[in-house]
Image (cartoon, rainbow, N blue to C red):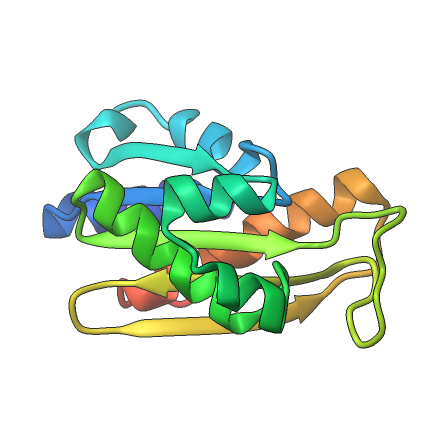
Length: 160
């Protein structure tokens, strides 16, 4: 049986002695929930910020207002600023973020329901990836969390 992504990522963080912080939007805390379901996650997980609205993204994660108005909340730029903001807010080795459109509403031109950006920030690396999923709201949120955990695990040297 394959281990859950949160276990694999947690083991990789623990092996390296690295710490993690999250900036979540469309997952509404689901990513933090999954990470803290792993016994011993307090060894590497420092905390997360659920920043759903623009002011929360700006005030809590340091996303620039100009980024939000120019590119939107669901963008590469916003995802990277969220990841950097989480890393800075918690003074961790890694910041991981997710921002997207879970649905059923909220679709925009070129940004359909199920579209999300996940991003990671370390002292040496910044990576952002976009994904499109086709599920309902709960399925999309779960898929978004999986995409973020896969990015985290791959950045730590694993294959997911």
